Image (cartoon, rainbow, N blue to C red; front, side, top):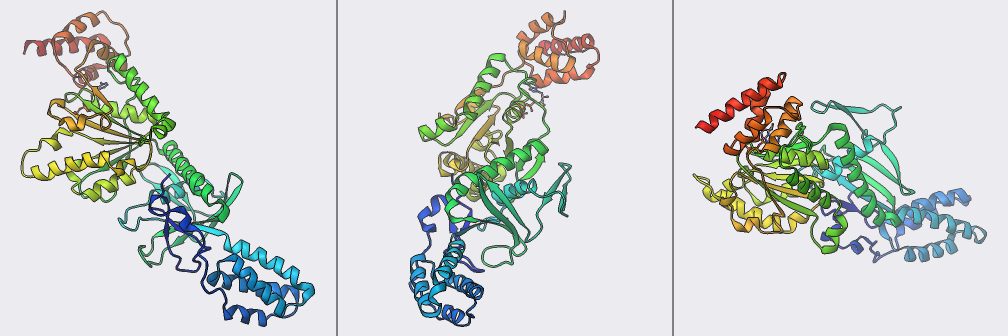
Length: 486
Ligand SMILES: Nc1ncnc2c1ncn2[C@@H]1O[C@H](COP(=O)(O)OP(=O)(O)OP(=O)(O)O)[C@@H](O)[C@H]1O
Protein backbone atom coordinates (compact mmCIF):
# COMPACT_ATOMS: atom_id res chain seq x y z
CA UNK A 1 0.00 0.00 0.00
CA UNK A 2 1.71 3.18 -1.11
CA UNK A 3 1.10 6.42 0.67
CA UNK A 4 3.72 8.05 -1.44
CA UNK A 5 2.54 11.58 -1.00
CA UNK A 6 1.74 11.50 2.70
CA UNK A 7 3.92 13.44 5.05
CA UNK A 8 5.12 11.59 8.07
CA UNK A 9 6.66 13.11 11.16
CA UNK A 10 8.54 10.95 13.58
CA UNK A 11 8.17 13.01 16.69
CA UNK A 12 10.66 10.78 18.47
CA UNK A 13 13.32 11.91 15.99
CA UNK A 14 12.65 15.55 15.47
CA UNK A 15 10.23 17.10 17.90
CA UNK A 16 9.36 20.75 18.16
CA UNK A 17 7.44 23.22 16.05
CA UNK A 18 9.43 22.57 12.90
CA UNK A 19 9.52 18.82 12.45
CA UNK A 20 11.15 17.44 9.36
CA UNK A 21 8.86 15.66 6.96
CA UNK A 22 9.66 12.16 5.88
CA UNK A 23 8.03 10.15 3.13
CA UNK A 24 6.60 6.71 3.32
CA UNK A 25 6.09 4.18 0.57
CA UNK A 26 8.42 3.80 -2.32
CA UNK A 27 10.07 7.16 -1.86
CA UNK A 28 11.74 6.40 1.43
CA UNK A 29 12.48 3.11 3.17
CA UNK A 30 10.58 2.53 6.39
CA UNK A 31 13.76 2.05 8.41
CA UNK A 32 14.52 5.71 7.80
CA UNK A 33 11.75 6.42 10.29
CA UNK A 34 13.76 4.91 13.15
CA UNK A 35 15.00 7.44 15.73
CA UNK A 36 18.42 8.81 14.92
CA UNK A 37 20.92 8.61 17.79
CA UNK A 38 22.25 11.90 18.97
CA UNK A 39 25.98 12.48 18.67
CA UNK A 40 26.05 14.63 21.81
CA UNK A 41 23.67 13.33 24.41
CA UNK A 42 24.82 15.44 27.35
CA UNK A 43 23.38 18.88 27.82
CA UNK A 44 23.98 21.48 30.52
CA UNK A 45 20.35 22.67 30.46
CA UNK A 46 19.21 19.32 31.80
CA UNK A 47 21.51 19.60 34.81
CA UNK A 48 20.23 23.08 35.67
CA UNK A 49 16.71 21.65 35.88
CA UNK A 50 17.83 18.97 38.29
CA UNK A 51 19.81 21.35 40.51
CA UNK A 52 16.78 23.61 40.88
CA UNK A 53 14.59 20.83 42.17
CA UNK A 54 13.65 20.58 45.81
CA UNK A 55 14.18 17.37 47.75
CA UNK A 56 10.45 16.48 47.78
CA UNK A 57 9.78 13.35 45.67
CA UNK A 58 7.03 14.95 43.56
CA UNK A 59 9.24 17.92 42.77
CA UNK A 60 11.93 15.60 41.56
CA UNK A 61 9.44 14.02 39.27
CA UNK A 62 8.30 17.41 37.97
CA UNK A 63 11.86 18.46 37.33
CA UNK A 64 12.70 15.17 35.78
CA UNK A 65 9.71 15.56 33.48
CA UNK A 66 11.20 18.82 32.25
CA UNK A 67 14.47 17.03 31.92
CA UNK A 68 12.79 14.33 29.86
CA UNK A 69 11.27 16.86 27.48
CA UNK A 70 14.55 18.67 27.04
CA UNK A 71 16.50 15.49 26.74
CA UNK A 72 14.11 14.32 24.07
CA UNK A 73 15.26 17.18 21.90
CA UNK A 74 18.93 16.40 22.25
CA UNK A 75 19.23 12.72 23.04
CA UNK A 76 16.76 10.36 21.50
CA UNK A 77 18.97 7.36 22.05
CA UNK A 78 17.25 5.84 25.07
CA UNK A 79 20.26 3.83 26.20
CA UNK A 80 22.48 6.88 26.32
CA UNK A 81 19.82 8.79 28.19
CA UNK A 82 19.46 5.90 30.63
CA UNK A 83 23.18 6.10 31.51
CA UNK A 84 22.92 9.85 31.91
CA UNK A 85 20.00 9.45 34.27
CA UNK A 86 21.83 6.96 36.44
CA UNK A 87 24.78 9.37 36.77
CA UNK A 88 22.47 12.26 37.63
CA UNK A 89 20.52 10.18 40.13
CA UNK A 90 23.77 9.04 41.85
CA UNK A 91 24.93 12.62 42.07
CA UNK A 92 21.80 14.50 43.17
CA UNK A 93 19.11 12.18 44.47
CA UNK A 94 19.10 10.50 47.90
CA UNK A 95 19.84 6.77 47.56
CA UNK A 96 16.47 5.66 49.08
CA UNK A 97 14.56 7.60 46.38
CA UNK A 98 16.71 6.69 43.41
CA UNK A 99 14.82 3.58 42.28
CA UNK A 100 11.50 5.40 42.47
CA UNK A 101 12.78 8.37 40.44
CA UNK A 102 14.41 6.19 37.84
CA UNK A 103 11.22 4.19 37.46
CA UNK A 104 9.12 7.36 37.02
CA UNK A 105 11.73 8.81 34.69
CA UNK A 106 11.75 5.72 32.51
CA UNK A 107 7.97 5.91 32.20
CA UNK A 108 8.18 9.52 31.08
CA UNK A 109 10.91 8.82 28.57
CA UNK A 110 9.09 5.86 27.13
CA UNK A 111 5.89 7.89 26.77
CA UNK A 112 7.55 10.83 25.10
CA UNK A 113 10.07 9.06 22.95
CA UNK A 114 7.66 6.56 21.49
CA UNK A 115 5.01 8.95 20.27
CA UNK A 116 4.66 8.82 16.53
CA UNK A 117 2.82 11.40 14.47
CA UNK A 118 1.52 11.53 10.94
CA UNK A 119 0.59 14.80 9.31
CA UNK A 120 -1.99 14.90 6.54
CA UNK A 121 -2.06 18.22 4.75
CA UNK A 122 -5.09 19.67 2.99
CA UNK A 123 -3.11 20.25 -0.20
CA UNK A 124 -0.28 18.36 -1.83
CA UNK A 125 2.89 20.41 -1.66
CA UNK A 126 4.03 20.13 -5.27
CA UNK A 127 0.76 20.51 -7.12
CA UNK A 128 -1.34 22.39 -4.56
CA UNK A 129 -4.19 20.11 -5.42
CA UNK A 130 -6.48 18.76 -2.67
CA UNK A 131 -5.18 15.72 -0.84
CA UNK A 132 -7.45 12.70 -1.01
CA UNK A 133 -6.37 11.37 2.35
CA UNK A 134 -7.27 14.69 3.99
CA UNK A 135 -10.76 14.56 2.49
CA UNK A 136 -11.13 10.95 3.59
CA UNK A 137 -10.12 11.78 7.16
CA UNK A 138 -12.55 14.71 7.21
CA UNK A 139 -15.39 12.47 6.08
CA UNK A 140 -14.45 9.68 8.46
CA UNK A 141 -14.03 11.90 11.52
CA UNK A 142 -17.35 13.58 10.73
CA UNK A 143 -19.01 10.34 11.83
CA UNK A 144 -16.99 10.19 15.04
CA UNK A 145 -17.99 13.54 16.45
CA UNK A 146 -20.17 13.62 19.52
CA UNK A 147 -23.62 15.01 18.75
CA UNK A 148 -23.82 16.93 21.99
CA UNK A 149 -21.05 19.38 21.10
CA UNK A 150 -21.41 22.52 19.01
CA UNK A 151 -20.04 21.83 15.53
CA UNK A 152 -19.27 23.57 12.32
CA UNK A 153 -21.83 22.30 9.83
CA UNK A 154 -21.33 22.64 6.09
CA UNK A 155 -24.28 22.30 3.77
CA UNK A 156 -23.32 21.06 0.33
CA UNK A 157 -25.72 22.47 -2.26
CA UNK A 158 -25.61 19.53 -4.62
CA UNK A 159 -25.79 16.84 -2.05
CA UNK A 160 -28.22 18.38 0.38
CA UNK A 161 -26.44 16.70 3.24
CA UNK A 162 -24.97 18.13 6.36
CA UNK A 163 -21.24 17.63 6.72
CA UNK A 164 -20.10 17.93 10.31
CA UNK A 165 -16.45 18.92 10.74
CA UNK A 166 -13.97 19.23 13.61
CA UNK A 167 -13.19 22.59 15.14
CA UNK A 168 -9.64 23.87 15.08
CA UNK A 169 -7.30 22.38 17.70
CA UNK A 170 -10.02 20.03 18.80
CA UNK A 171 -8.84 16.52 19.58
CA UNK A 172 -10.65 13.34 18.82
CA UNK A 173 -9.67 9.97 20.24
CA UNK A 174 -10.39 7.06 17.97
CA UNK A 175 -9.84 3.37 18.54
CA UNK A 176 -8.89 0.83 15.91
CA UNK A 177 -8.15 -2.81 16.59
CA UNK A 178 -7.75 -2.06 20.30
CA UNK A 179 -5.26 0.76 19.64
CA UNK A 180 -6.02 4.33 20.67
CA UNK A 181 -5.07 7.16 18.34
CA UNK A 182 -5.50 10.90 18.63
CA UNK A 183 -6.54 13.27 15.84
CA UNK A 184 -6.10 17.04 15.90
CA UNK A 185 -7.04 19.64 13.29
CA UNK A 186 -4.54 22.48 12.95
CA UNK A 187 -4.28 25.54 10.69
CA UNK A 188 -0.99 25.98 8.83
CA UNK A 189 0.66 29.33 9.34
CA UNK A 190 2.30 29.14 5.95
CA UNK A 191 5.75 27.90 6.79
CA UNK A 192 7.59 25.71 4.32
CA UNK A 193 5.58 24.39 1.43
CA UNK A 194 2.11 24.85 2.94
CA UNK A 195 -0.35 27.59 2.06
CA UNK A 196 -1.14 29.91 5.00
CA UNK A 197 -4.62 29.21 6.32
CA UNK A 198 -4.75 25.70 4.90
CA UNK A 199 -5.44 22.91 7.36
CA UNK A 200 -3.74 19.72 8.40
CA UNK A 201 -4.71 16.73 10.48
CA UNK A 202 -2.20 15.41 12.97
CA UNK A 203 -2.55 11.80 13.95
CA UNK A 204 -0.56 10.61 16.98
CA UNK A 205 -0.23 7.17 18.45
CA UNK A 206 2.29 4.88 20.09
CA UNK A 207 5.34 4.22 17.98
CA UNK A 208 4.93 0.47 18.25
CA UNK A 209 1.69 0.62 16.22
CA UNK A 210 3.06 2.60 13.30
CA UNK A 211 3.08 -0.26 10.80
CA UNK A 212 -0.42 -1.30 11.75
CA UNK A 213 -1.62 2.31 11.46
CA UNK A 214 -0.03 2.79 8.06
CA UNK A 215 -0.92 -0.59 6.67
CA UNK A 216 -4.39 -1.06 8.13
CA UNK A 217 -5.85 2.02 9.83
CA UNK A 218 -5.24 4.58 7.06
CA UNK A 219 -6.49 2.27 4.28
CA UNK A 220 -9.48 1.51 6.53
CA UNK A 221 -10.24 5.23 6.73
CA UNK A 222 -10.04 5.54 2.95
CA UNK A 223 -12.47 2.65 2.54
CA UNK A 224 -14.82 3.97 5.19
CA UNK A 225 -14.81 7.45 3.67
CA UNK A 226 -15.61 6.04 0.25
CA UNK A 227 -18.50 4.05 1.65
CA UNK A 228 -19.84 7.02 3.61
CA UNK A 229 -19.61 9.29 0.58
CA UNK A 230 -21.26 6.78 -1.73
CA UNK A 231 -24.08 6.04 0.69
CA UNK A 232 -24.72 9.70 1.46
CA UNK A 233 -24.64 11.21 -1.96
CA UNK A 234 -24.76 8.49 -4.55
CA UNK A 235 -22.08 8.08 -7.20
CA UNK A 236 -20.18 11.04 -8.52
CA UNK A 237 -19.17 12.17 -11.92
CA UNK A 238 -15.91 14.13 -11.99
CA UNK A 239 -15.46 16.20 -15.11
CA UNK A 240 -11.90 16.99 -16.07
CA UNK A 241 -11.70 19.52 -18.85
CA UNK A 242 -10.26 22.88 -19.85
CA UNK A 243 -8.23 24.76 -17.24
CA UNK A 244 -8.10 21.65 -15.13
CA UNK A 245 -7.02 22.34 -11.59
CA UNK A 246 -9.59 20.35 -9.70
CA UNK A 247 -12.28 18.20 -11.31
CA UNK A 248 -15.81 19.58 -11.35
CA UNK A 249 -17.77 17.07 -9.33
CA UNK A 250 -21.47 16.43 -9.74
CA UNK A 251 -23.69 13.66 -8.48
CA UNK A 252 -23.99 10.96 -11.11
CA UNK A 253 -27.65 11.02 -11.91
CA UNK A 254 -27.84 8.36 -14.57
CA UNK A 255 -30.20 5.61 -13.42
CA UNK A 256 -29.15 3.22 -16.22
CA UNK A 257 -28.44 -0.27 -14.90
CA UNK A 258 -27.80 -3.66 -16.44
CA UNK A 259 -31.50 -4.37 -15.90
CA UNK A 260 -32.58 -1.49 -18.13
CA UNK A 261 -29.67 -1.50 -20.61
CA UNK A 262 -30.90 -2.80 -23.97
CA UNK A 263 -28.19 -5.08 -25.34
CA UNK A 264 -28.00 -8.77 -26.23
CA UNK A 265 -28.41 -10.86 -23.09
CA UNK A 266 -25.27 -12.94 -23.82
CA UNK A 267 -23.16 -9.80 -24.11
CA UNK A 268 -24.68 -8.40 -20.93
CA UNK A 269 -23.91 -11.62 -19.09
CA UNK A 270 -20.29 -11.68 -20.20
CA UNK A 271 -19.73 -8.02 -19.19
CA UNK A 272 -21.24 -8.58 -15.74
CA UNK A 273 -19.12 -11.71 -15.28
CA UNK A 274 -15.99 -9.84 -16.28
CA UNK A 275 -16.77 -7.04 -13.82
CA UNK A 276 -17.37 -9.55 -11.04
CA UNK A 277 -14.04 -11.23 -11.71
CA UNK A 278 -12.33 -7.87 -11.66
CA UNK A 279 -13.99 -6.72 -8.46
CA UNK A 280 -13.13 -9.95 -6.67
CA UNK A 281 -9.68 -10.19 -8.21
CA UNK A 282 -7.54 -8.44 -5.59
CA UNK A 283 -5.59 -11.58 -4.67
CA UNK A 284 -5.37 -12.71 -8.28
CA UNK A 285 -3.82 -9.43 -9.48
CA UNK A 286 -1.43 -9.44 -6.54
CA UNK A 287 -0.39 -13.03 -7.27
CA UNK A 288 0.35 -12.40 -10.94
CA UNK A 289 2.14 -9.14 -10.11
CA UNK A 290 -0.13 -6.92 -12.18
CA UNK A 291 -1.75 -3.62 -11.23
CA UNK A 292 -5.39 -4.13 -10.31
CA UNK A 293 -6.87 -2.40 -13.30
CA UNK A 294 -8.85 -3.30 -16.39
CA UNK A 295 -9.23 -1.63 -19.73
CA UNK A 296 -12.44 -1.72 -21.77
CA UNK A 297 -12.86 -0.47 -25.28
CA UNK A 298 -16.50 0.28 -26.06
CA UNK A 299 -17.20 0.95 -29.70
CA UNK A 300 -20.26 1.53 -31.84
CA UNK A 301 -22.21 4.26 -33.65
CA UNK A 302 -23.61 7.25 -31.84
CA UNK A 303 -26.74 6.39 -29.84
CA UNK A 304 -26.02 2.69 -29.40
CA UNK A 305 -25.57 3.09 -25.64
CA UNK A 306 -21.82 3.48 -24.96
CA UNK A 307 -22.40 6.08 -22.24
CA UNK A 308 -25.37 4.10 -20.96
CA UNK A 309 -23.12 1.06 -20.58
CA UNK A 310 -20.54 3.09 -18.61
CA UNK A 311 -23.28 4.35 -16.29
CA UNK A 312 -24.52 0.77 -15.83
CA UNK A 313 -20.99 -0.33 -14.93
CA UNK A 314 -20.60 2.49 -12.40
CA UNK A 315 -23.98 1.81 -10.81
CA UNK A 316 -23.28 -1.92 -10.69
CA UNK A 317 -19.83 -1.58 -9.10
CA UNK A 318 -20.64 1.53 -7.08
CA UNK A 319 -17.63 3.32 -8.60
CA UNK A 320 -17.27 7.03 -9.32
CA UNK A 321 -16.68 8.11 -12.92
CA UNK A 322 -13.85 10.44 -13.96
CA UNK A 323 -14.66 11.81 -17.39
CA UNK A 324 -11.49 13.16 -18.99
CA UNK A 325 -11.56 15.41 -22.00
CA UNK A 326 -8.12 14.58 -23.32
CA UNK A 327 -8.14 17.34 -25.90
CA UNK A 328 -8.04 19.79 -22.98
CA UNK A 329 -5.41 17.99 -20.92
CA UNK A 330 -2.33 19.40 -22.55
CA UNK A 331 0.59 18.29 -20.42
CA UNK A 332 2.17 15.23 -18.87
CA UNK A 333 1.88 16.61 -15.39
CA UNK A 334 -1.86 17.16 -15.75
CA UNK A 335 -2.36 13.59 -16.86
CA UNK A 336 -0.25 12.36 -13.98
CA UNK A 337 -2.22 14.47 -11.52
CA UNK A 338 -5.46 13.03 -12.83
CA UNK A 339 -4.27 9.49 -12.39
CA UNK A 340 -2.80 10.17 -8.96
CA UNK A 341 -5.82 11.98 -7.62
CA UNK A 342 -8.37 9.59 -8.97
CA UNK A 343 -9.84 7.62 -6.09
CA UNK A 344 -9.60 3.86 -6.06
CA UNK A 345 -12.79 2.10 -7.12
CA UNK A 346 -13.32 4.43 -10.00
CA UNK A 347 -13.81 4.42 -13.75
CA UNK A 348 -11.66 6.72 -15.86
CA UNK A 349 -13.38 7.48 -19.16
CA UNK A 350 -11.70 8.76 -22.32
CA UNK A 351 -14.36 9.35 -24.93
CA UNK A 352 -13.93 9.38 -28.71
CA UNK A 353 -10.34 8.29 -28.54
CA UNK A 354 -10.09 8.06 -32.35
CA UNK A 355 -10.25 11.85 -32.52
CA UNK A 356 -7.00 12.06 -30.59
CA UNK A 357 -5.29 9.60 -32.78
CA UNK A 358 -6.45 10.95 -36.11
CA UNK A 359 -6.59 14.65 -35.51
CA UNK A 360 -7.47 17.28 -38.05
CA UNK A 361 -6.96 21.02 -37.91
CA UNK A 362 -4.50 23.29 -36.12
CA UNK A 363 -4.01 21.34 -32.92
CA UNK A 364 -3.02 18.20 -34.83
CA UNK A 365 0.44 17.97 -33.29
CA UNK A 366 -0.62 18.54 -29.70
CA UNK A 367 -3.40 15.95 -29.93
CA UNK A 368 -1.04 13.38 -31.36
CA UNK A 369 1.40 13.88 -28.53
CA UNK A 370 -1.46 13.63 -25.99
CA UNK A 371 -2.29 10.26 -27.45
CA UNK A 372 1.31 9.07 -27.21
CA UNK A 373 1.53 10.30 -23.62
CA UNK A 374 -1.63 8.46 -22.76
CA UNK A 375 -0.26 5.20 -24.11
CA UNK A 376 2.94 5.64 -22.14
CA UNK A 377 1.08 6.49 -18.99
CA UNK A 378 -1.23 3.53 -19.29
CA UNK A 379 1.72 1.21 -19.37
CA UNK A 380 3.82 3.15 -16.95
CA UNK A 381 4.14 3.57 -13.26
CA UNK A 382 1.31 6.08 -12.96
CA UNK A 383 -1.28 3.60 -13.95
CA UNK A 384 -0.14 1.44 -11.02
CA UNK A 385 -1.04 4.07 -8.44
CA UNK A 386 -4.13 3.16 -6.50
CA UNK A 387 -6.18 0.04 -6.88
CA UNK A 388 -9.40 -1.09 -8.48
CA UNK A 389 -9.23 1.20 -11.44
CA UNK A 390 -11.15 0.74 -14.65
CA UNK A 391 -10.15 2.54 -17.83
CA UNK A 392 -12.83 2.91 -20.49
CA UNK A 393 -12.12 4.16 -23.97
CA UNK A 394 -14.92 4.81 -26.40
CA UNK A 395 -14.87 5.24 -30.14
CA UNK A 396 -17.45 5.40 -32.87
CA UNK A 397 -15.06 3.80 -35.29
CA UNK A 398 -12.76 0.98 -34.18
CA UNK A 399 -11.17 0.73 -37.65
CA UNK A 400 -9.54 4.10 -37.17
CA UNK A 401 -7.70 3.04 -34.03
CA UNK A 402 -4.00 2.29 -33.90
CA UNK A 403 -3.43 -1.44 -33.17
CA UNK A 404 -1.01 -0.46 -30.36
CA UNK A 405 -3.96 0.82 -28.38
CA UNK A 406 -5.93 -2.38 -28.89
CA UNK A 407 -3.12 -4.56 -27.55
CA UNK A 408 -4.11 -6.92 -24.68
CA UNK A 409 -3.11 -5.43 -21.35
CA UNK A 410 -4.22 -2.02 -22.49
CA UNK A 411 -7.67 -3.05 -23.64
CA UNK A 412 -8.67 -6.23 -21.87
CA UNK A 413 -12.13 -6.42 -23.35
CA UNK A 414 -13.60 -5.03 -26.57
CA UNK A 415 -17.34 -4.41 -26.43
CA UNK A 416 -19.28 -3.75 -29.56
CA UNK A 417 -22.48 -1.75 -29.19
CA UNK A 418 -24.72 -2.55 -32.12
CA UNK A 419 -27.75 -1.09 -33.81
CA UNK A 420 -31.03 -2.04 -32.20
CA UNK A 421 -31.73 -5.76 -32.32
CA UNK A 422 -35.11 -7.29 -31.59
CA UNK A 423 -34.11 -8.39 -28.09
CA UNK A 424 -32.77 -4.87 -27.35
CA UNK A 425 -36.09 -3.47 -28.61
CA UNK A 426 -38.02 -5.79 -26.26
CA UNK A 427 -36.02 -4.42 -23.34
CA UNK A 428 -36.78 -0.85 -24.44
CA UNK A 429 -40.50 -1.65 -24.87
CA UNK A 430 -40.52 -3.02 -21.35
CA UNK A 431 -38.65 0.04 -19.98
CA UNK A 432 -40.87 2.63 -21.66
CA UNK A 433 -44.24 0.92 -22.13
CA UNK A 434 -44.13 -1.86 -19.54
CA UNK A 435 -45.16 -4.45 -22.13
CA UNK A 436 -43.46 -7.82 -22.53
CA UNK A 437 -45.46 -9.11 -25.47
CA UNK A 438 -47.64 -7.41 -28.10
CA UNK A 439 -49.25 -8.39 -31.40
CA UNK A 440 -47.18 -5.70 -33.21
CA UNK A 441 -43.85 -7.15 -32.02
CA UNK A 442 -43.49 -9.53 -34.96
CA UNK A 443 -43.82 -6.72 -37.50
CA UNK A 444 -41.23 -4.69 -35.61
CA UNK A 445 -38.86 -7.69 -35.51
CA UNK A 446 -39.02 -7.99 -39.29
CA UNK A 447 -38.43 -4.28 -39.81
CA UNK A 448 -35.43 -4.22 -37.45
CA UNK A 449 -33.77 -6.87 -39.64
CA UNK A 450 -33.87 -4.57 -42.64
CA UNK A 451 -33.04 -1.18 -41.17
CA UNK A 452 -30.27 0.20 -38.98
CA UNK A 453 -31.65 2.25 -36.11
CA UNK A 454 -29.97 2.87 -32.82
CA UNK A 455 -31.52 2.11 -29.41
CA UNK A 456 -31.50 5.89 -28.88
CA UNK A 457 -33.71 6.30 -31.99
CA UNK A 458 -36.12 3.61 -30.84
CA UNK A 459 -36.20 5.00 -27.29
CA UNK A 460 -36.95 8.45 -28.74
CA UNK A 461 -39.99 7.07 -30.64
CA UNK A 462 -41.31 5.07 -27.71
CA UNK A 463 -41.11 8.07 -25.42
CA UNK A 464 -43.51 10.03 -27.59
CA UNK A 465 -46.58 8.17 -26.36
CA UNK A 466 -45.90 6.15 -23.24
CA UNK A 467 -49.51 6.03 -21.99
CA UNK A 468 -50.84 4.00 -24.92
CA UNK A 469 -48.61 1.06 -25.86
CA UNK A 470 -50.38 0.22 -29.13
CA UNK A 471 -50.27 3.80 -30.36
CA UNK A 472 -46.61 4.04 -29.42
CA UNK A 473 -45.68 0.86 -31.27
CA UNK A 474 -47.62 2.00 -34.35
CA UNK A 475 -45.63 5.22 -34.33
CA UNK A 476 -42.43 3.23 -34.13
CA UNK A 477 -43.51 1.07 -37.08
CA UNK A 478 -44.23 4.19 -39.12
CA UNK A 479 -40.77 5.52 -38.25
CA UNK A 480 -39.08 2.25 -39.24
CA UNK A 481 -41.08 2.07 -42.49
CA UNK A 482 -39.95 5.56 -43.37
CA UNK A 483 -36.31 4.61 -42.69
CA UNK A 484 -36.61 1.50 -44.88
CA UNK A 485 -37.91 3.49 -47.81
CA UNK A 486 -35.02 5.97 -47.70
N1 LIG B 1 -28.45 0.16 -25.35
C1 LIG B 1 -29.28 1.06 -24.80
N2 LIG B 1 -30.11 0.69 -23.81
C2 LIG B 1 -30.95 1.56 -23.26
N3 LIG B 1 -31.04 2.84 -23.64
C3 LIG B 1 -30.23 3.27 -24.61
C4 LIG B 1 -29.31 2.40 -25.23
N4 LIG B 1 -28.64 3.09 -26.16
C5 LIG B 1 -29.12 4.34 -26.13
N5 LIG B 1 -30.05 4.45 -25.21
C6 LIG B 1 -30.82 5.67 -24.91
O1 LIG B 1 -30.31 6.71 -25.75
C7 LIG B 1 -29.67 7.73 -25.02
C8 LIG B 1 -28.33 8.09 -25.67
O2 LIG B 1 -27.48 6.95 -25.63
P1 LIG B 1 -25.94 6.98 -25.21
O3 LIG B 1 -25.54 8.39 -24.89
O4 LIG B 1 -25.70 5.97 -24.17
O5 LIG B 1 -25.27 6.56 -26.56
P2 LIG B 1 -23.74 6.72 -27.02
O6 LIG B 1 -23.44 5.52 -27.83
O7 LIG B 1 -22.91 6.97 -25.85
O8 LIG B 1 -23.81 7.99 -27.94
P3 LIG B 1 -22.61 9.00 -28.34
O9 LIG B 1 -21.58 8.19 -29.07
O10 LIG B 1 -23.28 9.98 -29.24
O11 LIG B 1 -22.12 9.59 -27.08
C9 LIG B 1 -29.51 7.17 -23.64
O12 LIG B 1 -29.62 8.18 -22.66
C10 LIG B 1 -30.61 6.17 -23.51
O13 LIG B 1 -31.79 6.78 -23.09
